[in-house]
Image (tube, rainbow over all chains, first blue to last red):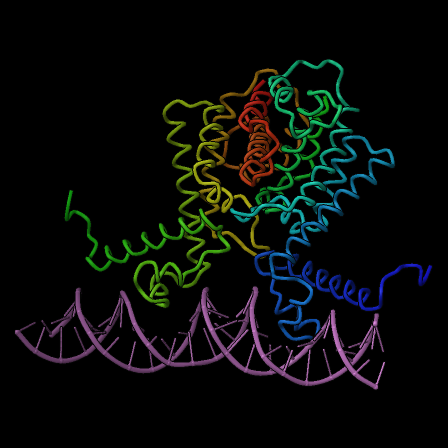
Length: 215
Length: 215
DNA sequence: TCTTCTTGTGAGAAGTTCTAACTCCTTCGC
DNA sequence: GCGAAGGAGTTAGAACTTCTCACAAGAAGA
């Protein structure tokens, strides 16, 4: 399996350095949050001096964008792998929770406080859409038969530009929206530490929200 | 109503400068996020030079803590005022949404991504608890009669150290936890812009979540 | 072999937080 | 009223940050 890739040694070196920079960046983010991420500190930690990193990332924002892309990619792959091995909607939800708890700051980098003016690049939005599709598929499969024609479903039926290419019925889309927001509600508060000191188990709340959603 | 307060002119001046600093800080936060808040820029904007602000706030963190306290205080007062004028649980929920939409970054400063090591000071946690009590009261009042003994309620019945002093039944506490996480789920994703471009109305989702919670 | 392209370097500008020393003015006690 | 004390503002400066630029050194291709 060697020598089959057409990359030059230089290109391999370049991608390897980029990977190491991103690894160090994840460590910094995990311990001090994304706002404390410092290109300079990463460079010194890697044994090279300051501006050298700008050969690999145009600026701090590009590094962060790359980290966001990597996180989205990883989450999308994790969910898809779970779905491929037969996980139902509840299984996907628990997979999401496990993924989030594994690195809270990584989850919050994707779904936490954004910078006001920030516009996500097109490809990361595509991956985000990929995640949505995986969940919508599971929603369509788990849909309870007695659909009570909720107001949300009728509204979504008329406003489904975001799922224009997906064959799922509006009830599945409505279920997806409820699922997404409820799971994110639990995870966001849990990861931010707002349940700390309250004494109850966030997992019970998570399972409760999940159960009421599937009944 | 003048001259009745025992404050010296100096104290009045001091509190007035602090208030103006915090006002400028809110402007910065609203337009560029909390991470872009700069004491230096605020000072220059106020016509005084850099380190002068350190007479009023020990450091950047203390200013942010003060902003957090003010935001919590404002939210608690807003909710209590709504409750006092007869708002039920749905009314309080909509009050919360209005408050959040009025200044997204303010809401996200309280409930968004935290700095990993940050510990909220005791008094802000007390105000946060005050908000919870207002909502729990409304939950207890709106409780549907047919309590189906949810697993969450039974768990909370055994783990209610956070509401030890409150007479609400565990079903009300369970309802509060569901309410809190669901409303936060919608608001957080909406304010972070994750619904942008999807084409549906977040308010419909908000009302849907609220309706399923009260049925 | 020679040229070109890439990588890393140090210098340095502009920004940040925050400390220290020094004025200046208000306030308080006598 | 007068002098001491304390608060508020100043500039200087250290230690950071991001990021640009000009230059040196190496690897890759002609």
